[in-house]
Image (tube, rainbow, N blue to C red):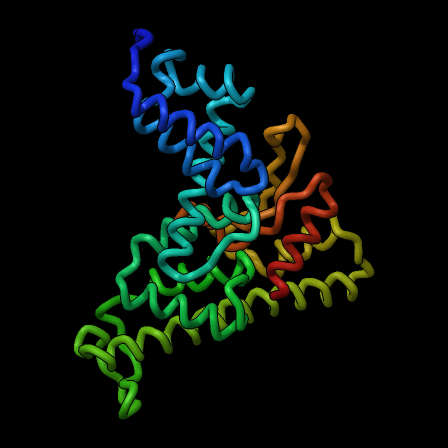
Length: 274
């Protein structure tokens, strides 16, 4: 049943006015816009003039509910990354691309979060690491098993991670995140270099041939290289190239979204070359 219109209190009406001013003035600030929309949705501040949040978005802002949800999720992603590892997405697009990494980081133990933050700061020297670096560090940290064998930070001897305590455990986790992420990114770089060399030896060199060569040389039996084509919020066609593990359903690596196929593939090539 569609909800009926419902009067809101003077305080709620004042809050709604303030939040709508944020949305109206903040087209370039996706975080503040998304946070304002989130509050309007969760507190149902739209209910006096609109039956649903979707109706409100379409009638007041000319957006679909899905577009508003994108902005909300981008703001939530940004908030998670800023408060956990000190990384601020540079724009809404990057925030959307980091959505899954933010979910992983949000579920990490505090020691692993610190290790990811330390690695990204050390590796990049800034608060603007690439999407591949953030995703790789997050997934490496999430994969660390408490019962795994690690090198003791003081003696170098092999011990179980769960046997370490305090600073020793934190140091071991940090070392594993740093080493594991570096090796993962290096493997990606090696994959693309090998595929490029193979392409050259076969007399191939175009972007379409790179896709086939990379798939042949670098993908595992459970991985797929996908080209995802869809419309953006403005109705324009966009495409993104990515590698997906079909068993875990996780994205292994992906390039930035582009407006034509060649650029999408080149963006993926740049990411695996990092």
